[in-house]
Image (cartoon, rainbow, N blue to C red; front, side, top):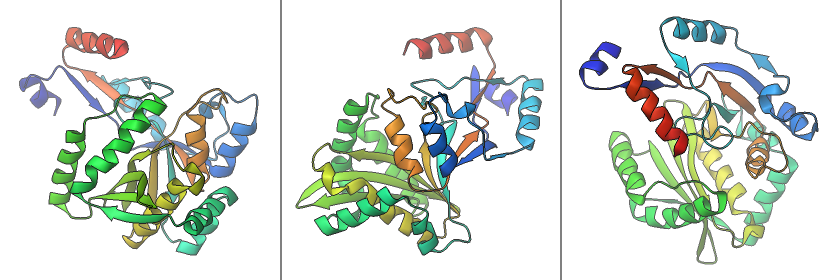
Length: 281
């Protein structure tokens, strides 16, 4: 593969092996957040370790691959997140999954239902409505948004493979779209991919209601795991991303650390130049 890519003119190769290093239960994450001495999730005692991960990492190093440190803010990089939050579905009933939600989640779902929040599936023509909320979320949470055309190309490419490969969900309340999210399915793994919401009418709790509908549909599709994707590694109260970790941990499940991203420099000079550019960007 490396020889072929070099012939094609590539100067660097990046990959993120789907190899789990360790896991923290939702209770372990909650305890770590409450511990004033814990500053990073990686410093908290893990619930379980995957012994084969260290061997894979050593084999990659011997082959010339270099492990990259998480970039961006608190591990949210341009590539794949090293830390994610997942809810196992395999062998569990919907009632069991619901019991795994914390009290705040269950309360918010009921509040949304009582307030009249409706969760609907959208299509290609609803992507601009999703994007309007996504742009607002990007400004509020201080990240660089992708263009609308990115999501339109994603929709076209993925739904051509299979109509359920990508889904769009929208939370409506009295004619307003308050939240929206995309959901991806590959085999028995379902991802909550991109989420967006407005600051208006937060009291009707559209996000919890939308996620529960997505989780319900994911189980109907035969999902073995519902993946909330990236979480922050920081546990400091001053970090605005800690609220996102609390939200995802409230769904039960576990925090998961992957082996991370690895680079293979085919041209060391150009690879270094790219590293400098990404650091400045």
